[in-house]
Image (cartoon, rainbow, N blue to C red; front, side, top):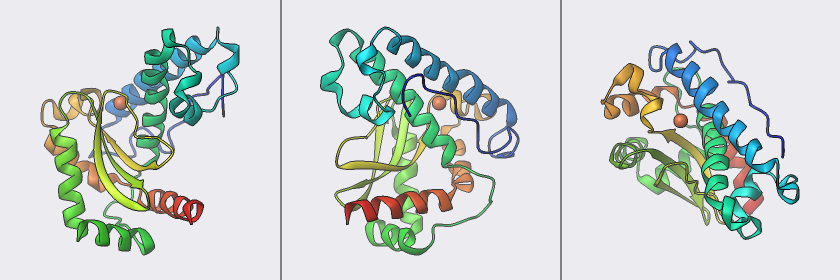
Length: 208
Ligand SMILES: [Fe+2]
């Protein structure tokens, strides 16, 4: 997919993630914040015909092809589109689902246990100063947890994001106010492990 980028619908209804994330948050987050990133990205690319056939991943990875005057704007807005699409795709309403199969084995092997994985991802999300994301990534065949500021993405040729949590205040403030740790704790009930597991398997096959 390339320019003009299209808004992806949420893969569930606005109230599907309640009580952990309320309808009002999802409406603002998807319809206002995410849609604004898509619109701004298209607005920037409108005058750069040579960039209009690049995919979102290419815009974020092949930055040497992007003119200096729009480098930061592309990073912020293409990143805003990429990060939000992954964030929304990584959630669903299937309460208490857990990772299975090879992803469960990889999580246990990398972090010791699911509980340790949760503790590490929680620390990355809670301690990210200001706005940003915490991520589960696959880097050189190994699972790792990192955090990034603003709309930065961990995409590169060797790092592949599997899962992310948005810790910008717009992701939780309407329901949790300043209680980011409570939002993060409840968000674990929303992880769409089937989607994350399928993403992991396709990357492992690609890298085999
Ligand atoms: Fe967001």
